[in-house]
Image (cartoon, rainbow over all chains, first blue to last red; front, side, top):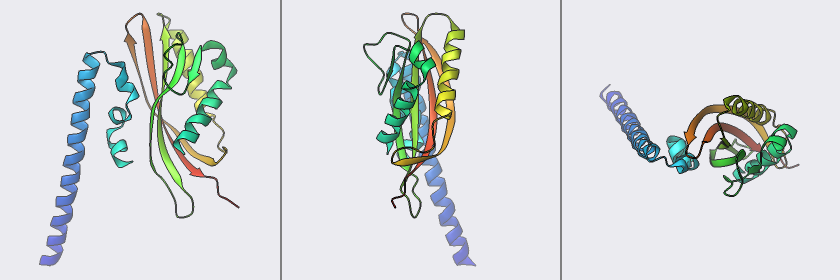
Length: 59
Length: 132
């Protein structure tokens, strides 16, 4: 029983860490897009990392 | 496979009589010298989508349409023609097979010098053609 709870806690911890990392990445990209948009930087549409941050990370 | 798909998509778009007649350029990158309206592949990225037997890729492609002027209806017609053309791309290609084509999202913005840009984002899932 204790072992099962430990495994469950580790899985939850890993999931939480991954979700936090993804949220951080999305927030960073959103901030960069906002700044580039304010500067009328058309190049932001030509940067795959800025369009699909999680997808580019996965690839 | 990403490069192959980009090439096939460009050939397919260039072969469309309506787009060819209305656009000044259909290029692999955003054309620097062409005057609007033009269509270009803004960017792309790919990830593994292989099966046990066949190599595959999930490929995202962003297509940028740039026009000039205030005529939104002309832009809408071009966007509609582009979308229809992309969706009608033949599934059997040289070296790979298109499994799915999915429109993801579009966005538009007005730019300096009376330019308007529209970005169309797609997701393609492809598998290599099996060898005999």
